Image 1 (cartoon, rainbow, N blue to C red):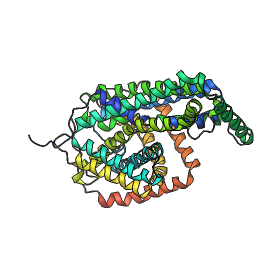
Image 2 (cartoon, rainbow, N blue to C red):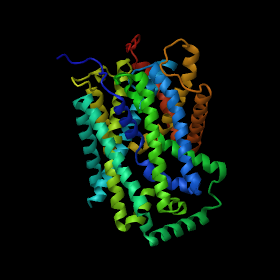
Image 3 (tube, rainbow, N blue to C red):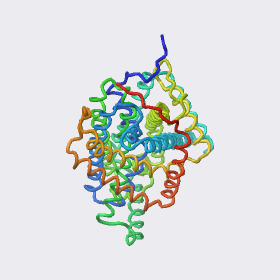
Image 4 (cartoon, rainbow, N blue to C red):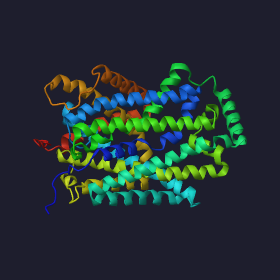
Length: 453
């Protein structure tokens, strides 16, 4: 049997759902509610902000579904940036997306490693080799074939859903037996902290914006299917369905988890908690609460590692196919997996774990994550005007108003990121300045992009 020379069109809706849910739901939902409770202590606002975040993410999915079905090429937002704004924009978006997703892979793996070390009473230094082993094992599994990667993603995402469901059930089932002393202690500490910082705490609309920003970051990941567009059987139907169905599922999980939290503890007891799930679990199970949360983390995060590896490999493959990266990264094995891109993605992720440079990388990349969405939403306007007759199997509902809302929102988030983290924003600007001569030096002239049917 001849080895394929391109990615195989063998993925379906179930993979789109699994990779989106797996990539979206990470450790944020276990941590972020503590911040939200501090900003929005009213129960209705604490729960309702997750519905507002879901609406915003849905509007974003609405816009990207149009681009994904119009340009059904694997590679994520790199494809849109290159097509709408030229090769330099594609070069910058593609490489930043690949590097930052490798860094995200490392961070998630390190969280799993720390949880494994804590759960089994191992020395803290063992968390790093555990994290590296997780990345290596999943990379080797995904290297076998795209179909096996599909199954692995679906299984790990199912395990994640079951783990989070167990957390929700525990909250609802045992809330009446929550340790009174733990609740009282948490509430007293939270009340004291609130009184001590009341003058400096944001309120009103500012608090709402801070909470919404945190919620939207927690929802981030819904764009997963566009990284695999040309590998889907029917991208025109499966891209929007994958994103919309996944967002509905994620929103349901997020809302139910937060309802479960406030059924167990009042919002004042959650406020300021660095790990809201841990605070709730301690109230439910006492000293065993931390162990319970560690089990949830270990069970739920491998799907995010798998999704990040798969997505990053498609970015490197696509960038390289268009002549903006090493040609060897376009090699595909007999199972349709981009083997060199997968191997390089795993190698760089392991290197991030080993060198602990990942925090700086992600801090700088946060600027570019928001910038990528901004460019993609702007691309909908640009291409509607420039290519009005192009085939659009899915057209963004409510455009230009719906797209305009998320574009303005992305610009606002970009501005807030610059203000909140000026140091890393300067680093990001330096990356942009340095990247252009690198692009000019490395780009071989006259390399056309292959068409994808």
